[in-house]
Length: 383
Ligand code: TRH
Image (cartoon, rainbow, N blue to C red; front, side, top):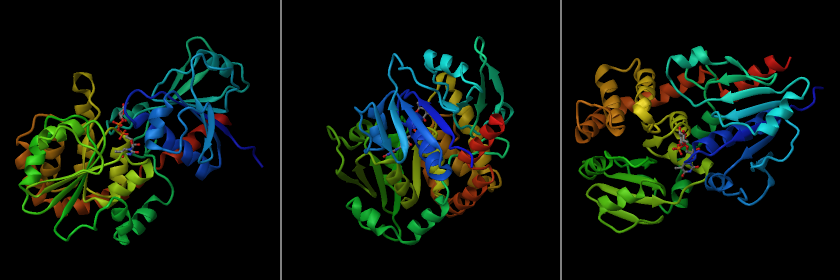
C-alpha cells in the first residue's frame, strides 16, 4: 500500500476571507475525501477564526477537521517540506522553505493555485510549468475554471445531495436558529454579502417598493455602514431588524463557512462577492448576483463579463438581459438601465432565472471537482 501523501498548503490572507476560505475548503476536502496528510500554513489566524470559529487564533499548531493548521511566522522555522506544496494565489513561499524544497529528492510537486475565472485565457495557462530562476524546482500553475480543460471548481463530494435534503426539509430548523419563521409563500428572501457599493441605496429602494415582501439577510461586514446610512440609523448590530416598505432587513452575525452555505441554500436570491461565495452561490442552485473583487483598471469587469457570457449562454435574450443588467449595474459597469428598472426586469424573469440556476449547477459538474483534478494532476508529476 502506498504511504499517505503529505501536502503543505500556504495561505497569505491579503484582505477579506476569500484566500483563507478557499485554502481551508481545499485542505479539509483533501483530508476528508482523499485521506491525505495536510498542513495548512496561515499568516492570519484571526481572519481564519472568523470563517471557522473552532480555530484558536493564538495557537502555533493545532489540528482542526484532521488538518494540521500552523501559524505562518516570519522568520519561518526550519521545516521539512511535504511531497506536495500548494502556494495559494501566488503567496511567496518562505525562502528557507524553498531552499529546503530544492534539497529534497525528488523535489516536491509545487503548485500555484490561482483565482477562479471564466476568462478564455485560463484554459491556455492551466497546468503550465514555470522553472524557478535559481533553484532546481518547477512550479505549476493550476487554474480553477468552468470548463473541463481547467481545474474545475471546488466542491465536496455529496454536496448536491446534502443541499437537496436541506431544501426538501423546508429548512425550518435553520430559520429558527436565526430567530425567523419559514418564508411566506410570496416572500423573497435575499442574502447580501457585498463590498461597499454605490448601487446599494437604489437596490434597497427597489426592494422597499416591491409589490411582495422582500427579506434581506446581511451577515455583519463591510456593507453595514452603508445600510445604516440608508436606514438613517447611527449603527447596526447583529440581531437588529428594520422594516422599510416591503423590505425587512435582518442583520446576522458573520456565520461559519458551513452555515453560510445553508444561508445560500435557504434564500431565493444571493448577492455574493469575491470568488468563493460566488462559487458556493452557483452550487446552491439559486439565482445569484455577483460583485467581483474590485481590481485596478476595472480588470474585474472582464472577469464579470466572462462569467456572465458562460452563465447566460442558452437563456432567451430577455432573460439574459435581465441577469446581465442587474449584475452589471451592481458592479458599476455601463448598463442601459438603472437599478430600479433592472430589479423590475429581474422580477419579471425570476421563474426562468430560478430554473436556470438549477440547470447551471448540473453544468458546473462537467468541469470537474477541483480536489479531484488537482490530486490527479499532482499524481502525474509525482510518478
Ligand atoms: O471575502 P471575499 O471578498 O474574498 C476576496 C476574494 O476572494 C478576492 O478574489 C480576493 O482577491 C480577496 O478576497 C483577497 O469573498 P469570497 O471569496 O467570497 O470569500 C468569502 C469567504 O467567507 C467564503 O469562504 C465564505 C465565507 N463566509 C463565511 O464563512 N461566513 C459568512 O457569514 C460570509 C458572508 C462569508
